[in-house]
Amino acid sequence: GAVVSQHPSRVICKSGTSVKIECRSLDFQATTMFWYRQFPKQSLMLMATSNEGSKATYEQGVEKDKFLINHASLTLSTLTVTSAHPEDSSFYICSARGLDRGETQYFGPGTRLLVL
Amino acid sequence: EDQVTQSPEALRLQEGESSSLNCSYTVSGLRGLFWYRQDPGKGPEFLFTLYSAGEEKEKERLKATLTKKESFLHITAPKPEDSATYLCAVHPRETGNQFYFGTGTSLTVIP
Image 1 (cartoon, rainbow over the protein chains, first blue to last red):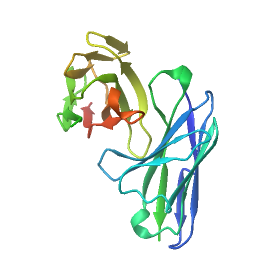
Image 2 (tube, one colour):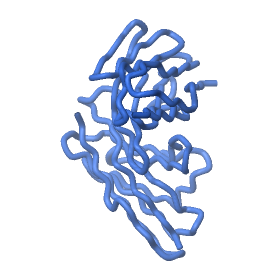
Image 3 (cartoon, rainbow over the protein chains, first blue to last red):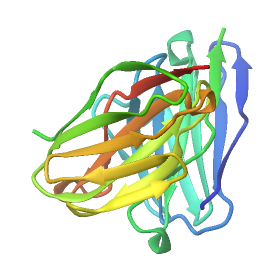
């Protein structure tokens, strides 16, 4: 299989602060990484797609200045939620796709964000 | 418009009672269809990738099949530990990297 990790798994922060979530592909090189958001009992909502070394492509309705994505290497992408507010509380999941892994996306375990 | 529909929304089975989950899709061209299992509070766990009609994949009690319009995930003699939400995703040819996810089938297997 392919292993993708996320850190932290859970974070609680105060309103107005910024939170960084890391996504790492542990045993393959991820040419493309994806960030999703999932609300309770709903399916995954794609927020953005990032390719290593280039700017992320954001889905319609996702604020690029609020959700900063960096994909600096073939094994690491980060999502920074800037000036977080309670409505940003959600479950954030990353996935990764590698050239040698076909079309499959492999998902991380997710990060639960709670903004107070 | 590309669309992925999963049914049923929820399914309760007795342990050992086999059944099938459905994923129907309408896309202009299929690059791949994917099945994932998701447990509460966790990220989706990859199960299968299917690329062309007629293809089948098996893993333990699960078997995935694909036609030109739908995919089935067959669960044979399920156990309580198979309880989870099963997600289907489609990767159309025209959308670059984007997957389209169904809303999932929540499976509960009762001992």
